[in-house]
Image (cartoon, rainbow, N blue to C red; front, side, top):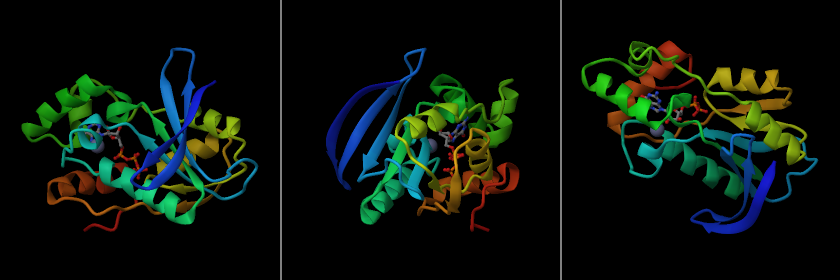
Amino acid sequence: MQYAKANIPTSYGEFNCIVFRDSSYMEHVALVKGTICKKEHVLCRIHSECLTGEVFGSLKCDCKQQLDLALKTISEVGCGVLLYLRQEGRGIGLGNKIKAYALQEGGADTVDANLMLGLPNDTREYGPAAKMLKMLEVSSIVLMTNNPDKVNAMKKANVKVSQRKPHEANVHKEALAYLKIKKEKMGHLLSIK
Ligand SMILES: Nc1nc2c(ncn2[C@@H]2O[C@H](COP(=O)(O)OP(=O)(O)OP(=O)(O)O)[C@@H](O)[C@H]2O)c(=O)[nH]1
Ligand SMILES: [Zn+2]
């Protein structure tokens, strides 16, 4: 359910910040620009939380760069929504992600590290994102993502995805190996070689 709403000024202009709470008090966020209600082809980014990258500036991944690119793109178009889902570490949580990072220090890649912990590679659920779009009365979305699984998950959750828009940000050299694994093992549609 929609719990709170206020405008916030950002480096990319003003966004309407809407907090949704689910039954377990998990707070997901929608940052809305312009009028999206009853609109078709709404520019949409469905973004998963990454404390290390987005708050601490870790260079191990491209999350912060993708977040900034999404806000910038929505701002330039003047209309769209960013859904920020509290699914840290592809859903395994912060502590487990750091355990996975420790295994990565020993040579494991991002997929194998999760599996070595006895955890799935990706436990994220997109039902909450679908519910938020329904509550915001968005008719269809142009989804900014490189992840085909995310497109399929949203379609499965009965969201009309009219188009996938590639979402490749400039990344640091420290994240290149991680991106290669996302391309090779997770099927992300990335241009890096
Ligand atoms: N378990 C784990 N999670 C990670 C790792 N690196 C980043 N993440 C998490 O991965 C999530 C982002 O997923 P990505 O695979 O980068 O991208 P995506 O959302 O699937 O696809 P895009 O829409 O193209 O960005 C965030 O929740 C990050 O915290 C890692 O090495 N291990
Ligand atoms: Zn990250």
